[in-house]
Image (cartoon, rainbow over all chains, first blue to last red; front, side, top):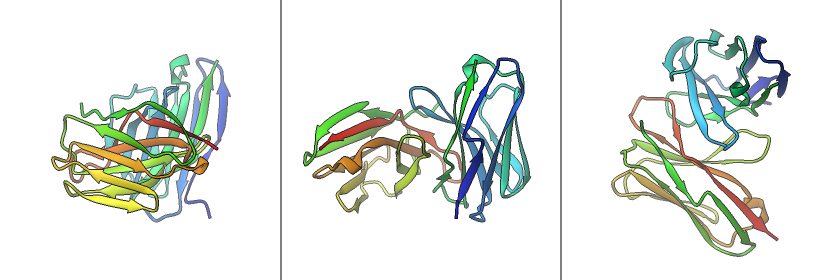
Length: 111
Length: 112
Protein backbone atom coordinates (compact mmCIF):
# COMPACT_ATOMS: atom_id res chain seq x y z
CA UNK A 1 0.00 0.00 0.00
CA UNK A 2 2.82 2.38 -0.84
CA UNK A 3 1.58 5.96 -1.05
CA UNK A 4 4.49 7.61 -2.86
CA UNK A 5 7.02 5.31 -4.49
CA UNK A 6 10.27 6.07 -6.28
CA UNK A 7 12.58 3.98 -8.41
CA UNK A 8 15.38 3.29 -8.22
CA UNK A 9 16.27 3.53 -4.53
CA UNK A 10 19.97 3.80 -5.35
CA UNK A 11 21.64 5.04 -8.52
CA UNK A 12 25.39 5.02 -9.08
CA UNK A 13 26.63 6.37 -12.38
CA UNK A 14 29.52 8.04 -14.13
CA UNK A 15 29.85 11.74 -14.86
CA UNK A 16 28.36 12.71 -18.18
CA UNK A 17 25.71 9.99 -18.22
CA UNK A 18 21.98 10.58 -18.53
CA UNK A 19 19.65 9.01 -15.97
CA UNK A 20 15.99 9.04 -14.95
CA UNK A 21 14.19 8.68 -11.65
CA UNK A 22 10.54 7.68 -11.57
CA UNK A 23 7.86 8.61 -9.05
CA UNK A 24 4.30 7.40 -8.62
CA UNK A 25 1.64 8.29 -6.06
CA UNK A 26 -1.59 6.41 -5.43
CA UNK A 27 -3.13 9.01 -3.11
CA UNK A 28 -5.18 10.79 -5.74
CA UNK A 29 -3.24 14.01 -5.16
CA UNK A 30 -3.19 16.75 -7.77
CA UNK A 31 0.26 18.17 -7.05
CA UNK A 32 3.65 16.47 -7.17
CA UNK A 33 7.13 17.73 -6.32
CA UNK A 34 10.80 16.97 -6.66
CA UNK A 35 13.11 17.95 -3.80
CA UNK A 36 16.88 17.61 -3.52
CA UNK A 37 18.50 16.84 -0.16
CA UNK A 38 22.21 17.53 0.01
CA UNK A 39 24.86 15.98 2.22
CA UNK A 40 24.01 18.43 5.01
CA UNK A 41 20.40 17.23 4.93
CA UNK A 42 19.14 20.53 3.52
CA UNK A 43 15.96 19.85 1.56
CA UNK A 44 15.26 22.18 -1.35
CA UNK A 45 12.36 22.31 -3.80
CA UNK A 46 13.27 21.76 -7.45
CA UNK A 47 10.00 21.41 -9.32
CA UNK A 48 6.29 21.22 -8.72
CA UNK A 49 3.54 20.02 -11.05
CA UNK A 50 -0.17 20.58 -10.58
CA UNK A 51 -2.46 18.49 -12.76
CA UNK A 52 0.44 17.74 -15.11
CA UNK A 53 1.38 21.42 -15.45
CA UNK A 54 4.70 22.81 -14.27
CA UNK A 55 4.01 25.45 -11.61
CA UNK A 56 7.35 25.77 -9.85
CA UNK A 57 10.84 25.64 -11.32
CA UNK A 58 13.37 26.79 -8.75
CA UNK A 59 16.47 27.86 -10.71
CA UNK A 60 17.42 24.32 -11.49
CA UNK A 61 19.93 23.75 -14.34
CA UNK A 62 18.19 22.84 -17.56
CA UNK A 63 20.01 19.50 -17.49
CA UNK A 64 17.15 18.53 -15.18
CA UNK A 65 13.87 17.94 -16.99
CA UNK A 66 10.76 16.79 -15.15
CA UNK A 67 7.96 15.08 -17.00
CA UNK A 68 4.46 14.34 -15.77
CA UNK A 69 2.63 11.91 -18.07
CA UNK A 70 -0.41 11.96 -15.77
CA UNK A 71 -1.40 13.24 -12.32
CA UNK A 72 -0.07 10.12 -10.60
CA UNK A 73 3.42 10.20 -12.08
CA UNK A 74 6.28 12.66 -12.07
CA UNK A 75 9.61 11.58 -13.51
CA UNK A 76 12.93 13.37 -13.37
CA UNK A 77 15.45 13.07 -16.19
CA UNK A 78 18.98 14.35 -15.71
CA UNK A 79 21.36 14.89 -18.62
CA UNK A 80 25.14 15.09 -18.49
CA UNK A 81 25.39 14.23 -14.82
CA UNK A 82 27.93 16.15 -12.73
CA UNK A 83 29.60 15.35 -9.42
CA UNK A 84 27.53 18.06 -7.73
CA UNK A 85 24.33 16.27 -8.66
CA UNK A 86 25.10 13.61 -6.05
CA UNK A 87 22.33 13.87 -3.45
CA UNK A 88 19.13 12.22 -2.33
CA UNK A 89 16.17 13.15 -4.50
CA UNK A 90 12.70 13.03 -2.95
CA UNK A 91 9.40 12.97 -4.71
CA UNK A 92 6.35 14.23 -2.81
CA UNK A 93 2.67 14.81 -3.44
CA UNK A 94 -0.13 16.83 -1.91
CA UNK A 95 -3.77 17.71 -2.44
CA UNK A 96 -4.40 21.47 -2.61
CA UNK A 97 -3.11 22.17 0.89
CA UNK A 98 0.47 21.99 1.93
CA UNK A 99 0.50 18.64 3.73
CA UNK A 100 2.99 16.73 1.67
CA UNK A 101 3.68 13.02 1.54
CA UNK A 102 7.20 12.05 0.63
CA UNK A 103 8.60 9.04 -1.14
CA UNK A 104 11.52 7.04 0.28
CA UNK A 105 14.10 8.92 -1.78
CA UNK A 106 16.60 8.03 -4.51
CA UNK A 107 20.25 8.25 -3.52
CA UNK A 108 22.18 9.37 -6.59
CA UNK A 109 25.95 9.00 -6.60
CA UNK A 110 27.90 10.44 -9.51
CA UNK A 111 31.46 9.15 -9.83
CA UNK B 1 14.57 34.23 -0.39
CA UNK B 2 12.61 32.98 2.59
CA UNK B 3 14.96 31.20 4.97
CA UNK B 4 14.22 29.08 8.00
CA UNK B 5 16.96 28.66 10.58
CA UNK B 6 16.74 25.79 13.02
CA UNK B 7 18.58 25.45 16.28
CA UNK B 8 20.28 23.55 17.58
CA UNK B 9 21.71 21.69 14.60
CA UNK B 10 22.60 18.66 16.71
CA UNK B 11 21.30 17.48 20.04
CA UNK B 12 22.35 14.39 21.95
CA UNK B 13 20.48 13.76 25.19
CA UNK B 14 19.67 10.98 27.63
CA UNK B 15 16.36 9.19 27.72
CA UNK B 16 13.90 11.03 29.94
CA UNK B 17 15.25 14.52 29.33
CA UNK B 18 13.23 17.36 27.87
CA UNK B 19 14.30 19.39 24.84
CA UNK B 20 13.19 22.25 22.63
CA UNK B 21 13.98 22.80 18.97
CA UNK B 22 13.56 26.25 17.44
CA UNK B 23 12.67 27.34 13.93
CA UNK B 24 13.12 31.02 13.11
CA UNK B 25 12.65 33.26 10.11
CA UNK B 26 12.49 36.92 9.22
CA UNK B 27 9.56 36.13 6.94
CA UNK B 28 5.92 35.59 7.79
CA UNK B 29 4.55 32.18 6.90
CA UNK B 30 0.94 31.36 6.16
CA UNK B 31 1.48 27.96 7.76
CA UNK B 32 4.30 25.96 9.19
CA UNK B 33 4.85 22.24 9.39
CA UNK B 34 7.13 19.96 11.34
CA UNK B 35 8.45 16.76 9.81
CA UNK B 36 10.56 13.92 11.17
CA UNK B 37 12.93 12.04 8.91
CA UNK B 38 14.60 8.74 9.74
CA UNK B 39 17.69 7.43 7.92
CA UNK B 40 16.93 6.08 4.46
CA UNK B 41 13.38 7.40 4.46
CA UNK B 42 11.48 10.48 3.41
CA UNK B 43 10.22 13.13 5.85
CA UNK B 44 6.94 12.32 7.60
CA UNK B 45 4.57 15.09 8.64
CA UNK B 46 4.06 15.52 12.38
CA UNK B 47 1.91 18.64 12.56
CA UNK B 48 0.73 21.75 10.73
CA UNK B 49 0.22 25.07 12.53
CA UNK B 50 -1.64 27.89 10.88
CA UNK B 51 -2.74 30.49 13.42
CA UNK B 52 -0.31 32.82 15.20
CA UNK B 53 0.11 31.68 18.81
CA UNK B 54 -1.33 28.25 18.06
CA UNK B 55 -0.23 25.35 20.24
CA UNK B 56 -0.68 21.73 19.22
CA UNK B 57 0.15 18.60 21.14
CA UNK B 58 1.00 15.19 19.81
CA UNK B 59 1.54 12.86 22.78
CA UNK B 60 4.85 14.06 24.30
CA UNK B 61 5.47 16.60 21.52
CA UNK B 62 4.24 20.19 21.83
CA UNK B 63 4.36 22.52 18.84
CA UNK B 64 3.92 26.28 19.00
CA UNK B 65 3.58 28.84 16.22
CA UNK B 66 4.82 32.31 17.09
CA UNK B 67 2.33 35.14 17.40
CA UNK B 68 3.80 36.87 14.36
CA UNK B 69 3.94 33.59 12.40
CA UNK B 70 7.69 33.96 11.87
CA UNK B 71 8.89 31.28 14.24
CA UNK B 72 7.96 27.98 15.79
CA UNK B 73 9.16 25.61 18.46
CA UNK B 74 8.96 21.90 19.10
CA UNK B 75 9.20 20.71 22.69
CA UNK B 76 9.63 17.05 23.55
CA UNK B 77 8.92 15.90 27.08
CA UNK B 78 10.67 12.84 28.49
CA UNK B 79 12.47 11.98 25.27
CA UNK B 80 12.74 8.33 24.28
CA UNK B 81 15.18 6.55 21.93
CA UNK B 82 12.33 6.26 19.43
CA UNK B 83 12.35 10.06 19.11
CA UNK B 84 15.78 9.89 17.47
CA UNK B 85 15.77 11.40 14.00
CA UNK B 86 16.08 14.53 11.90
CA UNK B 87 13.45 17.15 12.69
CA UNK B 88 12.61 19.59 9.92
CA UNK B 89 10.41 22.64 10.02
CA UNK B 90 8.90 23.78 6.73
CA UNK B 91 6.99 26.93 5.92
CA UNK B 92 4.52 27.88 3.27
CA UNK B 93 5.15 31.59 2.84
CA UNK B 94 2.12 32.34 0.76
CA UNK B 95 -1.32 30.80 0.65
CA UNK B 96 -1.60 28.81 -2.53
CA UNK B 97 2.14 28.47 -2.99
CA UNK B 98 2.39 24.75 -2.74
CA UNK B 99 6.10 24.27 -2.34
CA UNK B 100 7.57 24.35 1.12
CA UNK B 101 10.71 26.11 2.32
CA UNK B 102 12.51 23.74 4.63
CA UNK B 103 14.62 24.59 7.63
CA UNK B 104 18.19 23.47 8.05
CA UNK B 105 17.16 20.56 10.30
CA UNK B 106 17.90 19.42 13.84
CA UNK B 107 19.44 16.01 14.32
CA UNK B 108 18.29 14.52 17.61
CA UNK B 109 19.84 11.49 19.24
CA UNK B 110 18.30 10.10 22.41
CA UNK B 111 20.58 7.72 24.29
CA UNK B 112 18.97 4.91 26.29
